[in-house]
View 1 (cartoon, rainbow, N blue to C red):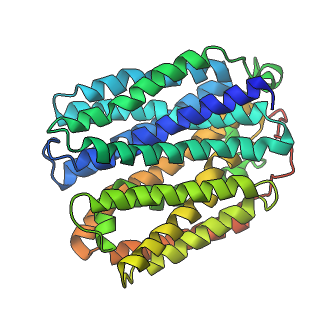
View 2: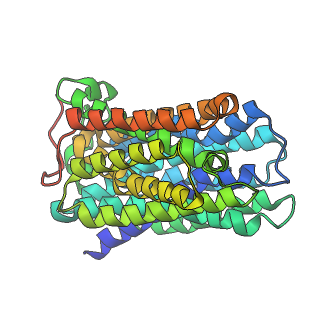
View 3: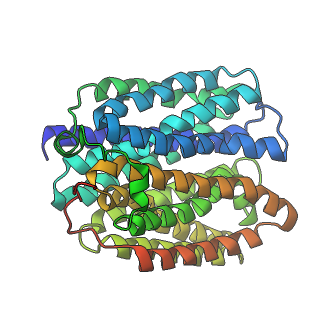
Length: 402
């Protein structure tokens, strides 16, 4: 692997690590005894604020990466992490924290399409899948570390939630320095730069691209309905599986993260041989089975098996394909825009899960949620089977859009 490509993969993976940490650290933050008082409504708003910002940032910054260049936006999206991360740490009210996390989410949303596009455009066809899939490993590691810091820092008094928000700011400062040494993508310079077709959103809905757009937006939307519903409200979900008390649900969330890391690692190993569609379908099959099993928590061991199956399935399939498939399904002029649109739709799914789930649990308990998620995964299987195309042995599409 060339040093430039290795550095791009490393720094992009560090960026998705920060993404995963920033998005999921809200889980232990909301359980900190000294955190601002919340009710059901403010809890949902706080939990979803970064996701809503993510919704806007993905399409906006992904589109700008097509128009202005990959490197340019690669540098500037992480500025959001630093500025609004600091604002979040020193928030004096719940409203201030919600606003800071909304703008933080805009930067996170932009990082998904920009990082995956950069790595895919610098990678040779033979190793592209594994290279981009490493971004999924970085994201899942960030999720795991946010749970670890949540456990370690929760005993440091009423302000411990602020300490949980410090690490990503430090990591972001390091990453922005490292990113400054990058070169612009040759594909963007030779195929996209100066083209009027660059970043045209309506091109995503042209006859040539509508199937790819529906495929990426569809599976990603459905995955995030389940993924964020489970992870953001892990304590209440874990309670439904029989894990009670203050710390047990957080430990169970960490266990999910470890299981996802196992799944991601397996997916990275298999992606070059099994293919994208097969892994994606296998992941959703496992998620559907795990969610159905979750309704019947016979014992602690049974619940652990459910968590393992869910985590491994999420990691081995959609957890890495949400990074790998968007750049492989859109031509160069709208690659960032297409990946950003897919991410935007996924955050709409995440918002659905995060906003609606606490209402359902409060009224009916966790069983209807698990059954619903099982059916969501089945719908995702149909979407992948009907709309997905195998891109494992294809070059990146770089045709000019008329």
